[in-house]
Length: 259
Image 1 (tube, rainbow, N blue to C red):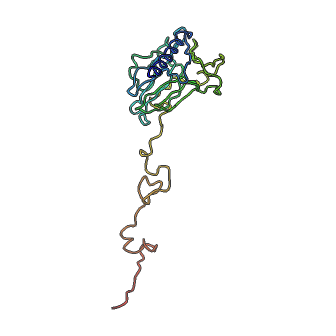
Image 2: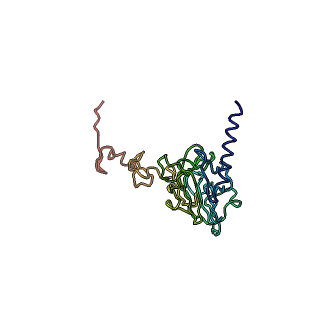
Image 3: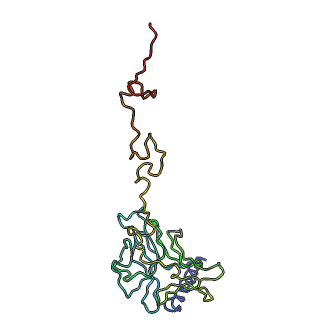
């Protein structure tokens, strides 16, 4: 009985290998419910190549970047899909943020990317080809998926990267269910200053107290630059003007009964 799980695992691996061997160039065939295309641990790593176009001009990578120091946000990582034109060279590198081992990874110009979504710095991120299409996971939580045209009955079967740089998903009948060009994005530089997914505003604790409220504590005035309202002067207190609202210079005399 102990051999059954091992045999099942071997059969799955064998079917994946056969699918990869028989799939046309530039195509990945889905043979499991959630097929892992690439994963990158929290310590980072070089971009993972998971698909190339038939001519080799375009390459699809799964990338993990770190937030650039001083860029803002909360120091999150970013994992995303990026399609590179390998025949051209980007002036500032193919990726944004800080990429571990980038010198070993992709070289070229970004022509398409999935959305920049911040992820935890302690989780492995993964790219899956599932019944939802392409999905990016932060640990066990999905953070992005392509807007695939599927109702759950049209089995999504193939992922392809064609020689015009577009990535497409087709169902088992060959019908188009998704294409990257319908969601145009490129060169977002995830994790770099001003990139999507980074909070542009300062966190609440970095703003002046009551910056967006007129209800301030300790008697502070909205336009008082953090200072409270002026306290009565000592002379006013001594004359009783502050306490009773009498005009300055007019004293109040209290007659005490004689002993």
